[in-house]
Image (cartoon, rainbow, N blue to C red; front, side):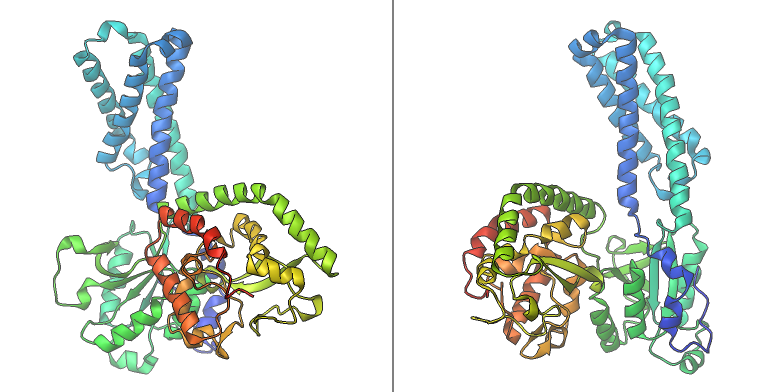
Amino acid sequence: MVSPALPSSAPTPAAAYLDRTLLSATRLAHLSPVVLAGLVRLADFATAVVTGLALAVLYLGEGEVVTDPLYIAVILTSSIGAVLVLDLLGLYGSRPLAAFHRNLPRLMLGWASAFAAAGVLIFFLKAGTEFSRVWLALWFVVGGLALTAERAAVSLVMRQLTNSGRLLRRAVIYGAGALTDGLIRSIEADQGAGIRIVGVFDDRTDERLRRDGSSRNRLGTLDDLLDVARAMRVDLVIVALPVAGEQRLNDVTDRLSVLPADIRLPAQATQIRLSPRLYSHVGPVAMIDLYDRPIADWDVVFKWLFDRGIGLLSLILLSPVLLLVALAVRLETRGPVLFRQKRYGFNNEMIEVLKFRSMHVDMCDATADRLVTKHDPRVTRVGRFIRKTSLDELPQLFNVLKGDLSLVGPRPHAVSAKAADRLYDEVVARYFARHKVKPGITGWAQISGWRGETDTREKIEKRVEHDLYYIENWSVFFDLYILAMTPIALLKSENAY
């Protein structure tokens, strides 16, 4: 559904829109259908395996099942077969998962087909006399009932997630014209599209839009779109502009590219017809992919496990070092051991980063309005050492476990950090694109020689360049490589003060 237009008395469209209850409802993170389908596949497989093994142990005894690998082989093969057949029957989409009763016949057909395949396997192995027919019959009945109960529970969960809006991708559209009108009608007509259009934006005035034949009221301009997209964590931005206006399209997409969202162009925006394999789809509408959200679907899960697992292990192993540094800071100067600083995090959101205090208490610079330089009198003796060795960053492991930071990613910068007396985003046009992923304790820029002071235009440009390369080429192995190279990079401390 498209949100209603704002009243004309609203001071600014975006501000009025953000005050609505829709904001709190859509702040919940969107759950990836790809991940949900994978988890249900795993649940189906586990249900089949557990019921098969449990019945075999109860009926035949643990000793016979353990010593006879054929039982294990048939259980695993049949369970895998069941998942494959259910996939072929299309039972892992969001709609089939939610519509349990409607898809129960197909579910039972899939289970029966997998079981028939198991019977064929037993026949060709000439192992019919070695299997208990009672066990097979029990597994067919009890396994089918268990699978039914599991899918009924999944259906309830899916309905709750749908009602909460967590299965809906939040989308905004830039460009209010005839193309947009047809686009919205097509998406709204497909109830299974899983898209919620929360607003249409355009820099043209309402009067000009009416003259151009648009029936849609805009919520605001491109600047408003960027504000709303960040505040509501929009998942999808559709640029409904004709390709003929190349310069305008380029300018708009360049500004939108800093958002951690998928950016799509409707195929109807151009008369050029591409191969169907080159299109993605938003509901029934073919789209041309302009930018993809980095680290999506299962990559989010892998990154989360990587950060929490290695982060917790690192915290445990380095706890003696943290205690010694805390003691050294406390013994040299009075005041708090930890220093808290506001920095930009994912999606430009403000986070509070922890560090060991390296400056005198009355000289701490919470906004980093003034960069630390060589022989800076604000830095203590202990502070110089821990800054050169980056030991002052170790408390950020707590930020990792909290979820504000990743182990690896673009380094978070303080809100007032400057290069050549200019804010970073004033120096580098695509500076905020580095916030499309969570910031990290270490990163590609840091191990590539761009660690430490960023007092010149070149230094911040190079850091941003490396950060964007990391975002576009992320993988778990890339993260492991950066972590492994970080201790070596710390030996080069000429730019760290």
